Length: 206
Ligand code: GRF
Image (cartoon, rainbow, N blue to C red):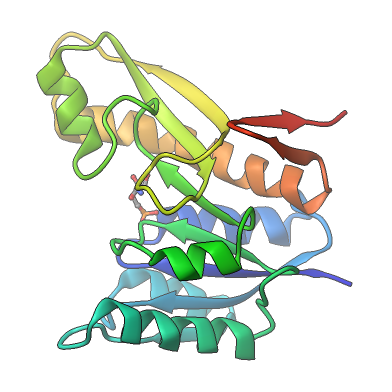
């Protein structure tokens, strides 16, 4: 049976695009992106999904509390076959924090991509935080999601040099290129059953 993937998005959708491409090319095996869900109806990511024939669902969160919204997201995932225990959820620029009950029900089956070398610079505007701190190397991280923000077991990281004269857009663009490589790679490893979570560490099986 194919792995059913649900992607949660809020905006541009370039990471979503890299995942869709990798599935199409067979780099992510035995998997399908079953649904893309956005809390923002105007998200470009929804258009990308539609163009590729993937069900795209907007669940507008304005005027709704987080629990209520999350229940709707959960129902949409489930009705598209992304079920706890068998499905995989990818956060790809999803700007909402998932409640603990949701994370627990999909334990070990939710991934996120973050534009820094965690645990440095969690939260918003990671690239700006890195520049303001004056680091010489930053990068990106794919990790499993736990209830604490950007804190789960790390699957893959890629370092990116900070150059003299870098500003937020230039650094973000170089990091994004690497994001588009490591996120599909992490999903491919998961889909082939090669990831094992052991406490804080993720083992990659041969
Ligand atoms: C990426 O930089 C990702 O690391 C962060 O949000 C951004 C999403 O970009 N979590 P996109 O929507 O995938 O283009």
